[in-house]
Image (cartoon, one colour):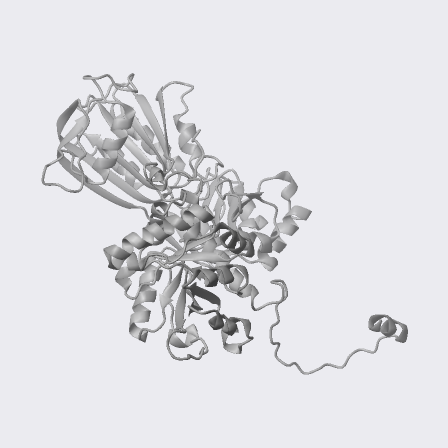
Amino acid sequence: MAGFADLSLPQGLDKKSLQSLLEAAAHLGYSAVALNHVVDFKEKKQEIVKPVSPSELFPSLPIVQGTSKRIKVLTRLTLVVSDPSHCNLLRSTSANIRLYDIIAVFPKTEKLFHIACTTLDVDLVCINVTEKLPFYFRRPPVNMAIDRGIYFELLYSPAIKDSTMRRYTISNAISLMQICKGKNIVISSAAERPLELRGPYDVANLGLLFGLSESEAKAAVSTNCRATILHGETRKSACGVVYTVKKPRKVEEEETPLPACKKAKTQA
Amino acid sequence: MSMPVPPLRRLHQVPRHLLVCEKGHLRHPRSRHAAHVRDHAYSCRVSFLIPECGILPEVLKSTIADVGEYYLVRNLSVHELVAHEFIDAFVKKGSCYALTYNTKIDQDNTAALLPNGKLMLSVDKDTYEELGLQGHPSRYSGKKVMRYIITIDLTDSGFHPDSKKHKRVLWALKEKKPLKFDFLLAWYNTGAEGSTLMSYFSKNQIKALKPKITISTLRDLQCPVLQSNELHGKPEESCSTEELFEWLGAVWNQVSLDNKSSSFLSTYCCPQPNTVVEKAFLCTITGFIIPEKIIQLLEQLCCYFGEPKLAYWLTLTVHGFADSPVSWRESEHGFHKGGENLYNFVIFRNLDYWLQMAVGTNDDCPP
């Protein structure tokens, strides 16, 4: 049981609305949120910009209700891909991509869904909830994604805004559940206003509607989000085990002279 | 493609919860009512309801006012609770209770000190792996264990200042992974002289707090008719314990009991058979209340029936903290969608009692 997290808050808003969104999230009990920067390749070629550092945007973060810790703000990048050539950006070692904490991909065709689940180096695969799925989920790519530690993301704020989208959200979610059996699901809002945010226990209840069990639904808002964030952190390390940190340069001290034979051993 | 359990069927299932009912007599030599109260260490709210009572007798008033204060210490490191000065001054002389404040049992690390000298730490996976102390996985954590419980017995004979155990625990809590929380503290002194909690923690920001008391009187309340020897109720004659439990919840939450057609909030009706009492006295004490004080209050409520009274029964309800790591004795307590762990006494005129103990989803059956 980890802290609750909401991994999708839109970044493109002005500072004041973002601040009110953050306060609403902290008041509802979320310990971590991720600011989502969406890049859509259908439009003209877009550059991937460096993520905005949360400490610059928000001088003081609100305290999570019921605890004495401050809310954590992460950065996330979502790539909307509708053509295989768009994935090349992920394969290239672009410096800016590495600066984001979480990387998500939104595939629009079945082939791209297969590629995202099996080969792409991402943390989240977004599932379309605003329109009828253009393709059916199949077991092999979904199982491969679960093995690789990739999570599937469902959004719930479109369901709050419009009743047609509510039907699509539930039907798409249920068809996903039949294949993945409730594993590796993350539910997040894409709330643009504080009113579209819902508390974590309510979102867990929404998971019950999608067909998750009680423990799976609660994990979709807490444990699975923590796993996604850790999966994103492993991208910044070697094999998920070794980290490199820039050490401040210290003035080198005089080394005590070691006996000659000992020095030879250490150099071997 | 094989169909799993149809998703909608799960919607009809409610989260698991348990209600245990017990019957006894308060003056019976082997009555276990005091033991049950003592086993439930942390209570945040004590409330009692006396039908047909307008003004409280003086004895009860003074008992309520005497419930005793508790202390809130900010930013206290856990290793200070393991220090031998603390153990000798407070844990071994009397009953010391400590519980972390403002921590959620399903999200953060929590610590609790039980009166029998056991320190329970309920930590998440990362903290457990960094801390390095021996513990066991939580029972409510599922296949991928996310929560561990570490129990340290402070009164163990093998825990003296020079032992390896003590050194390891101190090293883990002081240097390896220092844990700091806001603690709620209370100490029941069995008469021994010594320092008080205020003076011991004067370096930290310790504050003494008194429990909050709210009193109200309800008029024309519908009360169910109960018979002390009929736990399950007799049709047309008395109500069962489950019906009483629901009715009590409705009264405390100010839900109307008459199923008015204009009300969209609730269709709850007072169970039949019921009588209408002219007035009823409600009192709630909120704070960090220790079991010894609850036993005193229970005794005084028994003495209420020493003189002839109109009421046939009265109730005393005690709520535990939703975020405490233990419910009764050392059974683990978890928070799934709700963290209730409460018990309710119904005391009859003839000093029979009903005891109902209720827990939520991630909890063991109460004793």
